[in-house]
Image 1: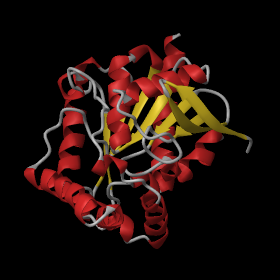
Image 2: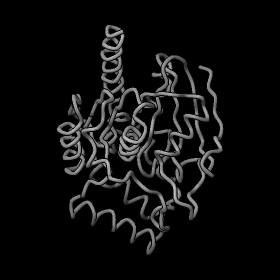
Image 3: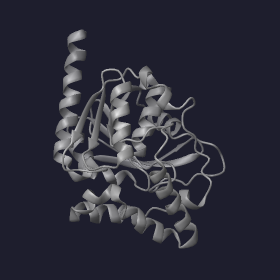
Image 4: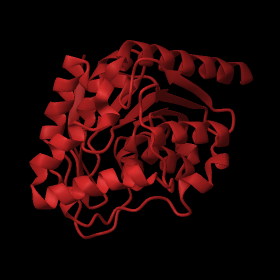
Length: 274
């Protein structure tokens, strides 16, 4: 498989990306503390069907850390697509990457062909006191005990219990998390979400949408999945058995088949409407 990789100088930052395949573009957006390697099980597989792009979000992986200048992840995505000469793409986002994909779809609807959300978070969602306390604890530990301690606690979270039960997934997650800088725990992040927030605007989404939520994910993530299904017009939702917060790593074969079937179904509909 031929692959192009490099750094896109956009929006005052450098974003590391990889690109392979041909046909309709598909972009993968990773979750917090991760990087584009979290889609190792999708990148080569989907390159047989699409032009696939994965990149490290600003502040993660090989991409630049934020500065004091305000920025938006969804604007970074737009700039990256323009840099690559891509006018319209399918978006696949896991966790925080899903929230960014939603924001992008609302901000730039003509640039989104399909929206695929894997255990997604959501801009404007008010997390439970338990979830907020857990994240605040990570931040405090990063400051008091060091970033390495916070990363170990993140990997040990109940949200990733089913992922840890798979030795290969646990190893790969541990490797990626070990290389996370921890910058967001010890710095004020000037990154901004969409305004008004996505939670107030989901009815505006017109792109075909697939929502995959892990059976063993956290209560907040299940609530978000239910909310997305209820508010996004004609969204197709699946609770995937036996997996938690990173379904694309825990059961990649099933996730890949579900996504391919979803894309094939609405592609046929598009063809019939022409």
